[in-house]
Figure 1 (cartoon, rainbow, N blue to C red):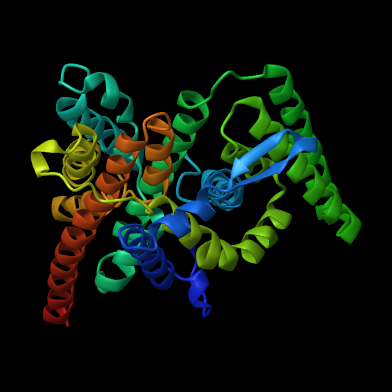
Figure 2: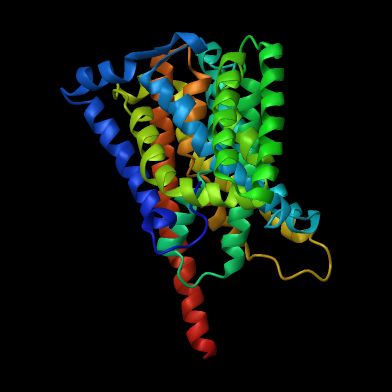
Length: 396
């Protein structure tokens, strides 16, 4: 998701972070199925408590709840930019990708529920996983587009970027609403007050630029995270709230400062920990419906939903607007949208937090479905890019 702007630093680009993320997940999956499993599992399950703050989390949860909040802070900064000055800054710009994004959420949910819904044999255990295949990983999708899409019109990237950003918003809403547990509204109210203080400090920093204000913002940010983490709302929402309210100039500086760390350390570490699952030694027929639902819903549901709804959005676009995308380019965006990965892994962890066996299989479904979408999109995007390059040469 992070790394939308180009830069000589590979950790600020689109290709290298995607490769690093995939490699980290592959290493995690490999080591989980070797004799190294018990030693690494012991580290990930070890608890690090901060009694004074009422926190007692395992190392794995410090990664998914703590470090990943920094990732969501950067995501929220980018979301705010796109909503105010970027590809979603007006209804005119947002309507077409919004319709396609709706299809990219609705159809994967339907596909998942047809396979693992409440009417199936294991429905009671697996139906709650329907949010998992709704996410798109911007970093991966844009990384594949950067590698294989030389020659594609810039409108394809713009459409995919807007589509994936809307997916992010939907994923954040799912995390905030669906996976809140026993919410302490007083504590959450204090978190909102803390966010308001962060907002005021960020504007003061914009006006003065004093280092003391920046330090105060950091402390308030940590306090906000602690309050959200202990309120029952998932801790990553703290990062979202802070990123959305930060003044634009300080926000951009924070994004630039954090982007290499997020791309080079936080996301790979999360991918490693999330993918650290044992592949069950069972026949395919014994695998959980959650596995099959996610495996199929990500590549198939996304391309069907984005393809159909995207085509409809192009037919109803206002008169006088630029020409719409060709249907094959919409399909390319749909295939790229099936690369769920980061947010899908988090959603799988949350959806099956009380069922470790199903959680592991859901994670395998995310990895498998994302890999299928990655391979198919790489092939199809390459074909479309070659077609456009040939067309350009013919015109010349």
